[in-house]
Length: 207
Image 1 (cartoon, helix red, strand yellow):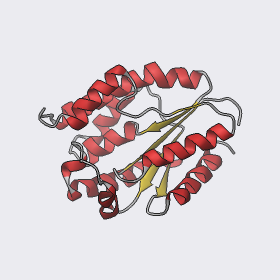
Image 2: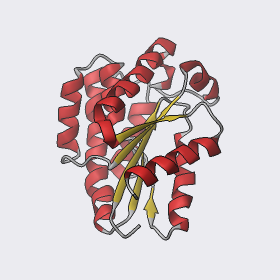
Image 3: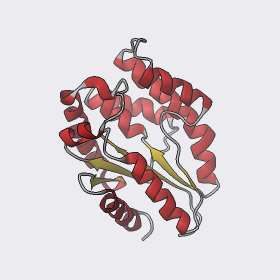
Image 4: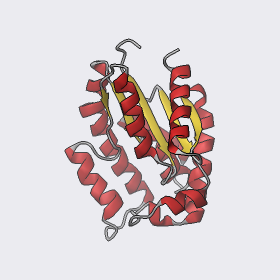
């Protein structure tokens, strides 16, 4: 596998099981001798965690969709420069729990912001750094919503119609990314999702 740094993002509708799959993939790479970091986005830096609190849990603070998008981008800009770029330069594997595609979908496709503008702002925020592979975990909205048993954050509380647009946006934008993205069936048991992810990573990145 060598020691080339890899940036892999896991994305998709809330309730798709990203956190579980990041853990399983981390263990899979570590068994193969790789050093893995798994930042959450937004978060994982002092700035990112402060912005995460505002974005997801301070619902008494009104946010326009544009302001919401820009705060996510500020968090990601810090994450890329402080954590992701140094890790890649050190030959590590970065498994990102969400990345730029999430904002294209949540604030763009589903939220009404101009999709191309979100991509443009994202390229500035990330200094053009895109994942080697974006894995979109896809499942029906009704199934995703049924898995959200804890208290809902700002985005999760927007309702089924919003999340239908989210799901459709992820599929549409993943197709736009071509070989740099793969759509994973997340309506199956976690180990089956993991097997799909391993197969896609082996085929696209490690072949």
